[in-house]
Image (tube, rainbow, N blue to C red; front, side):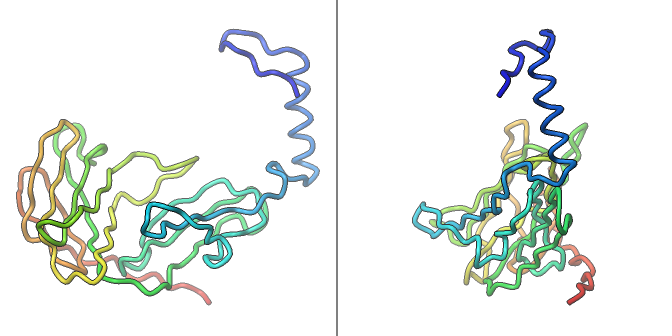
Amino acid sequence: MSRSPLEASQEPTAEYTHAWEAVHRMVREGLSWSGNERDVALGNDGTGRFVDISASSGLDALRDGRVAAWTDVDGDGGLDLWTLSRDGARLRLLHNEARRGRFLRVSLVGNGANRDAIGARVEVRTSADGAPGVQTLRAGHGYLAQSSKVLAFGLGDATTVASVTVRWPDGEREDFSGCVADAHVRLERGAGSAVVVAPPAPIALAE
C-alpha cells in the first residue's frame, strides 16, 4: 500500500502511481473494487436504533455499489430507490411496495438567486404537541447522487396536518396553511399558504 500525497502540490511518488495502475488493471480484469461486499440497508426501528434490513428489502446485492438516490416515481408517498453499480445490473429501480400510512409531499420555491430553496428546513406536525418530522433540502445526496428535491413526509395514521413551518436558507421562518394529508403541495416563499398540485403521471413499470 503506497501512501497518498499529503499536499495537493506534492508530486506523487512512483510507488503511488504504480499502485493506482495496478488497481485499475485489476478492475479491467473483472476483479471487484470493494471486495465483493454486499450492499447494506439499515432501518430505523423507532427507538433510536437501526437494524439490518438488507435481505428483506432486496438491497443486499453482491455488486460494487456506487449510487443510491431516493425519489417517489409513482406519487404514492412511498420513497423508491434508484441504485447504480459498477458491474452487474448497473442501474436498478427498487419500487417500494411496502404497506404505508398517509403522507405529505412538499416542493419548495425560494426567491432571488436561490429559487430552488437549497438549504431550507421543513418541519411538519400532525398535532400541536407532537414531535415534528424534519427534513432539509440539499443540493447533493450521498456519493455521486442527487435525490428528488420533493421532500416526502410520512404521517402514519394521521388524517390532518396541524402545521408546516419552513426555515428559509437565510434563517427566516414562515408558517404555511392549507397543507393536507395524502397530497403534493408547493410552498412558495412569502405566500403563507400551500398550493396543492397534481401528482406526477404514473410511470409504467415492467414486471
